Length: 374
Image (tube, rainbow, N blue to C red; front, side, top):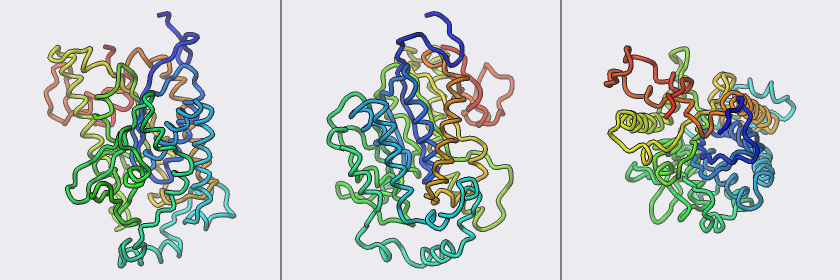
């Protein structure tokens, strides 16, 4: 294959990619922007997608749009979904006179309506406040996504993760059992909604056990590139000292722990492949990449995940498009050729690695350090 410059591709080439979409409430609009930009690249063919919470919603809306009418239809359908989210009554409704940039700087936890809601939720459960389990997200998902079609189609592998409340184990819903209930279960924050019951079991948000789930989807994929769209903060400069700050950081850690453990497991597998202990064709066929949220998103208050103000969602959308555009310009030519992140650097400190002099590199460096070509 002839070499190409970064961001350019041989005419007519279609490179198979799968996507991993994190949850994060309204911050999922960043992922919407990433998907919008990727759908414009005629050289990419999306063959799989795994998502949790907001990532699960993006995943099924994307897959349904692609199956119905290709990339252009998927772009329209994603926009329609997020515009519907922006029209819903919520904390974002309070910000209607503001620009998107100003709304992004608002700390909802300091507003009187949020403070009132916070007092209520600490004393009354969703079963007290919403005994019938009404979820405003059900209607737009049902209206936009044909789940029966998704079950029958074989072009895109789908995985949506939820957490079993009783067993604490995760369940991954795939093409054969994907449904609106599965997606709502994946996004069921227990302080907001009653657990979603499926097949006699109750489920909460999938972020507790996989944000998103990776291994199950990867096992079903042919040789392709696996692109992680990461929106949840990993590192924080300062140690939180307020009650709210400590609570928010605990949520960030808990919603990312299983995700990083899975990536570490994949790193071990790739190391065994490099050392000749596992077959490369079977276990080393996937190349890994990550498109990360810009530093601007890490400056946002945690409560901004509840901010559905349309102008704010558009700000996140544009951030996502810009991040994907920059990533494609820098790494587009690597798709199909090499990984651009090194999962082996995620292994626990002290883990044996004969190729490195230092065994104490920070795990986060893996997201910017390329793995050596296979």
